[in-house]
Length: 83
Length: 351
Image 1 (tube, rainbow over the protein chains, first blue to last red):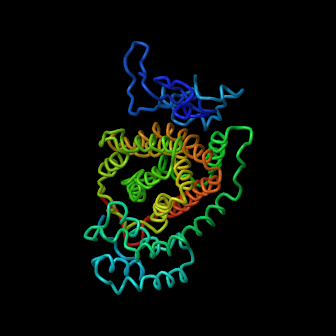
Image 2: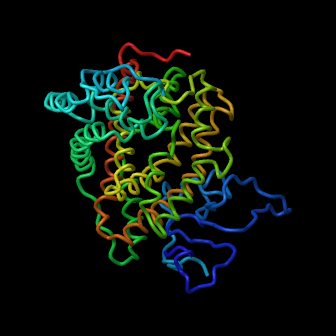
Image 3: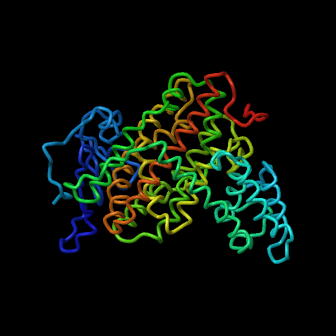
């Protein structure tokens, strides 16, 4: 997967979501994470990894548990960083 | 950092040299290469030799925060750089042997994937195959409070300057790999908040257990292998030709971190330590789940994409990190399971 900053041919968006194979969604840029009622979810870093396997103990964030449960995103999803 | 206690003739002679002025002709300096040669001839294993690892640690320390009372002019003194190289060569050879022994077969990079994804896949596979004894499981379930203190003391040699050795690599990289390393390091250094720096969080954990949180406070108490783990990072970080190794080191470090830190935190919670004590571990569960993706694909993968010849060094850095981590774990677990201290004999860390 090619990082957005390496694709000068494409107008960069304000934020990007990178779909990590067998892993989380990596979210960069300008965004908010909100609860259903609109409250901000506590956030300590600019770039976050959001759980995609459902097994994280610190959802919505990833804690690496996808590796323990052998989470697979196959059949292969989009191989490139989100458009 | 305070001046450590010498651990043999080489480190004693080096510390004597450092006590003088770099502008003076120091007779003892000219004697150092012979002492290095004598020590190397005697040492069975450079990686576990106290005298060699302490000498190297002190030489590297001149490039970090320095040693108390030692003139800053020694940092780039040609005589000391020459000694450092005499020690680095056999150390690097030893690391290559240890890495190959720990991981005899590295899976090939899948040709079907883009290079950076392929490199990340191999590194994740290496991390998943790491099945040695688990310090984190022991800490979670069994470690006593004195053992938790020892655990922190071993880690303190690096964690109180966490991320610094990898920062050396930033100007040696370009493009995607550089952006990735800066993104990770910014997070390591608290994203602009000094109180969120990982080294600061670690100092908080040390204080919560009644330990001295000054950098290097426990350098005299840790075995050579603990110094070697940090020296390895300095070797990789300070030598541009080893930029592949420092990238591989960081990637495997991040990939083997989230779950163990969850378990470390559990060990401290089991003894009723509060969030001030566990903040460091809790932070790493979340942070390293982010970092491992960036370090594997964009840093290590991006570097190999830009410089394909660096793949062997990326894998060397990763497997050497695994090898030394396994050795330190073995040393600590062996002591604990026999009811002994894992620190150097004669030292304890009673709070």
